[in-house]
Image (cartoon, rainbow, N blue to C red):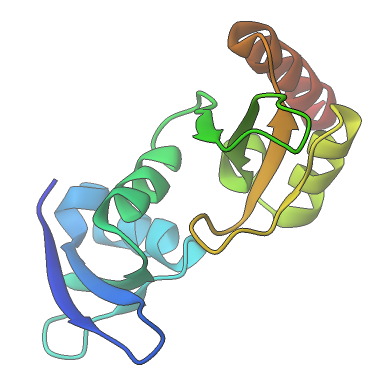
Length: 144
């Protein structure tokens, strides 16, 4: 994926520009996805969208989450008692944040408040495959 670094703002966030063909083949579909994940049209060239993220990988994952239907787990630091934790982005669970929060709460997830990952839920996880199956089942239950 061809992502260009534009500049850094005062808060340390980096702005990246992405051509709409990298997001989706159709401009209108790419615009829907870009606006959904916080992108804006680039002033100089309408074929590009600008995103404000901490890293290029975070932006790549956000774009890919809207293309894939699978749930991706990201490793987080262990909690105070040494239990392993993982983070799931809310777009992997549902299209809107409120529904995603309900799905996460049903599987004992809590809101992740770290600055390095925007809009995620954290789960205690010893078995990754089992957690993915439970989240998929709960997701399907809410989509009925």
